[in-house]
Length: 292
Length: 339
Image 1 (cartoon, rainbow over the protein chains, first blue to last red):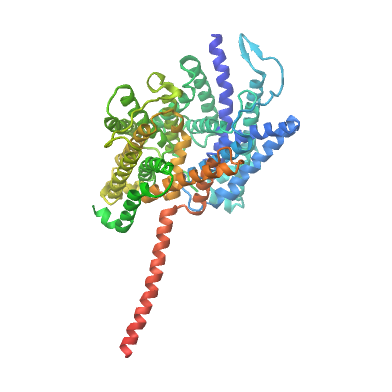
Image 2 (image 1 turned 30 degrees about the horizontal axis):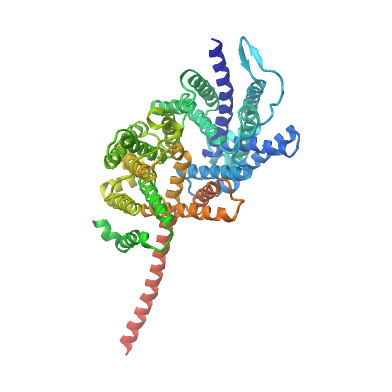
């Protein structure tokens, strides 16, 4: 039972990270119908820039803030100067474009920081929590807390503020939104900025628990995307639930079946769901066509 | 052989270059580069049929490549079959996988399809790594026999590989000029319209998948016997993206583009390797940066790719020339008429 709870707790933490990535995907997708395959790279950059800045003797908090800001700007740059300039883009060319951008970032990271893995010190250095024999690192609590704060913040932003209403308007009908004086281009830029920022935060909070290196973004990004699809693209709550589900199932799979197969479980679940219910577990209007 | 007539000069130029290449006065190392280009070309031609013609996407093509490589390696090194039979099985196994996968995901489009193929690629790579008793796991396999094609030498391997590339090329070009090719393009334009014209969209998509899987498997089998050793490393997402880059840079809609793309990308890799000796700064994955940059720039500025773009350019040049000559002809006619 202790073992079971331990796996469950580990899965919960991973699931939280996948949830942030998945919601990053959805934030962008709902406004601009773009799947940003470079989402995982936002996490990688968040972690790596923080590590690099701490290496330059900046305080933890400042380093983290600068990293978040830098990645946010990168997200906006990606939308404004690259994606907005693509003419006649369909889903396939957008995938190719963002995959290209993600490979570019990975290459740049490996050129700048090398291929070694780095680690961040944990945010607080206290002993792990022990609840009924289950050990939970303090950092995991930080991660879950951050995930919850981000989720609540995004929910608040989307449903309670004018900005959120504008973004929602663009995602429902860009033409009508334009007629109401809302600029869909600007809203996409904001969406890219938001998912850059949340991605960077996620990258920073997981760096102390698992190491960070130039290629951590790939798997994180893909699993987040799996969660987004599982939950039904465009449905943030579904995506968050799916993300936790993937995290937990993966953790059980790694614990009870084979740790080497850990990553395969997430993908097997994904393919199974795509085959049986392509609209995702929680149903969604979209069928993945996308395009500008 | 309609295709050969249609392509006329281009095709003979290609044959000439392929035949003469090993005798060019360059380092023998480049012969093995040319062999690798041959493997890549076979994969990219298949991927081009799938992407450019049928309008699907595969982010897991390296998985079929790996399946082919491991299949051939295992049946020859472990069970002592001849490499030729190994190659045959190396086409069958990926075809079966492509059939099952294609069957399952034939209803998916766009992002969902991309994701499903990407997931498949990961699963295969992880599967190869974990199935240690057969594949040797992360340590890989050694002592994979060479192909005896009138004896074992690199020159013979070169001709064998490029003969196969030529077969694949002619097959694909002929396919495009057949009903199948037209059906692929119809599906690309609009699945609904294609269905209403009586095209069974699912089965054509499936066949595009299977063909591309077979080609990748064949290339993988050849790769295994050429290298003699295997590990799961080169069959992941990175390699799939490399194949994608080759197809995209050459031009998705053109079979020749796939071939040219394979040549261009390998040439860039070689140039970077040479440059690395002189510029120590280029230590990391410079080629990753370059490939990523190419993908972004091509989609932004030249979505049709190199070959269709230059074909269109040549065409417009010809038209201009013709127009100029036409005017001259008119003038001379007038002169004749007056004299």
